[in-house]
Length: 503
Image: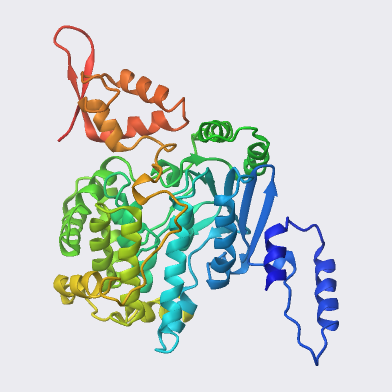
């Protein structure tokens, strides 16, 4: 084990050909004595996590491309000690996370988790997996030096947990982002109740319940990424990052901004703008799934915009396919998570995961079996089968009260002492596009830089352009928000038009 760990900690990408690797493996197997078994040392390129060192940059590379880099227990066991060493060491100035193949990380290995959870003897291993995963997520969120997550490919579930709280989150045209847990009878976790509750409007609630995907530039536009960089530029960007003599947060941000791409006229952007976005925010603002469904039904029948009616109808169909129990757990978690620290939200999700592992709802096993193992196309046999059969009081008791460290039936998340306190975590939106809340505060005069006076559109654009250092995408974001959330008021004495926020 020591030899394997030493190899993993010092390796760089190998240059051997496939034939050379095959030959090396064959020699290794042939040289193994049948009478004296020896532990198999994996060739560097077969290890599930690789590590690179370039200047002051330290990179972890998730390396299970055939499984879309889905996290399993061995990967977490390899990743954590190395990241902790980097966090505490003086030579590592920047940490980078990447994935091999089509994915950064497509989630956790829930098939194995469900198999463990199905047997009382192995159930503690299922719960322990979530415990290890959530602590890893917190460590990366609280890392006391710049952390760059390269989300170049599928980034879902556990992959979101590894990346979404990084200081710098780079989306590319290959990025596919989702929290699809309600599809498999589970609940968005890895801190989802924290970060989904803090993005603009009700986008987070929508994604938590539907499990819908957003892709490419839209991941950046909705704040899940801080930058959008074409994938072809990533290698050069990482080389330039390693060449920085003083890799401060500001220097890293400026470097990444030099590699970003402006939106092309024919490039697909987010579809959640204008009337559709207004309808989404209105429908998903409710605190019960029943009320969300009721408003979506109303929109699908009576909205003046046909595209919005179609979206509402499709969303209703999507929600009908999801686990009713999962929908109610997810909505409650997102609402509660908005008032929590990240660590508190992760602990709440640990409690919820324990309930699912203990079989308090059969839907986790049902969903994973149907969707991931048997790959059926029909709606899984959820129990209860319908929303009206799921009582809110039972959801609260089973998933939010029954299990907790205080009750002695859930492990407590215990971040290492060298990390900052939970309240001292860096703002994950610091280098992202301005949020709607920021824009509103500038319009209504409550922003610390607004001067508490009325403002014109040109002044608003100029203010945020300066505040964000000319960041690409700022103008488009502000124009979309103003079009949807503001009205213009003509000044009585000049030709100026003042912005007023719609209440």
